Amino acid sequence: YRMSALSRRSFKVILLGDSGVGKSSLFARFNGDSFAEATFATLQVGSCRRTFRFGDREIVLELWDTAGTERMLSLTENYYHHASAAIFLYDVNDQATFLGVQSTWVPSIRRRDPSMTTFLVGNKTDKASTSYAYENVTLDEARRYESSIHDLQVAGNVQVSVKTEEGVQELFEAVAEALCGDG
Ligand code: GDP
Image (cartoon, rainbow, N blue to C red):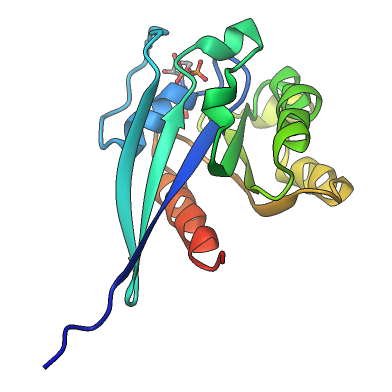
């Protein structure tokens, strides 16, 4: 009798995005914590692990949060070091944060490791107002931007609400699954 061989691999996943888009809130959800209306930037660099299972494969995601240091617009090299995947987070109600993805965060990956698996994620869909739809970042807009990126691997392009949890667990599973097929 032999136990079936379980393969287990760990991947570092980093959160990138302008201040206020919901990175810490997403990190807290990953950690199993509840949503908080008011968050306070702490200058503690945090990481947290969760295991996902696909058949006989176990994928451990180690998610890292910027801990507010993105406000200085210079995340340390240590943050990017050995990361396998990056989640670009923007606020669907705030075009400036979507521009931030394009002008700051995507280029930061381009400079360091274009082979990284990436995800474009719009947050706060619970707040998106239809009457001001022209101000919202639509999924169509995000898809148009994705199709303009030719040098990075974009494995997912979704919009979620960390507050209501809509799409959040699916996002984590999609990241694990994308990395599962890697290497
Ligand atoms: P960070 O600076 O990117 O880490 O953003 P935070 O996680 O600190 O979130 C900034 C603010 O947005 C906080 O007041 C959160 O409660 C709020 N927030 C985060 N996610 C959501 C969401 O899905 N919906 C709504 N309505 N607010 C959110």
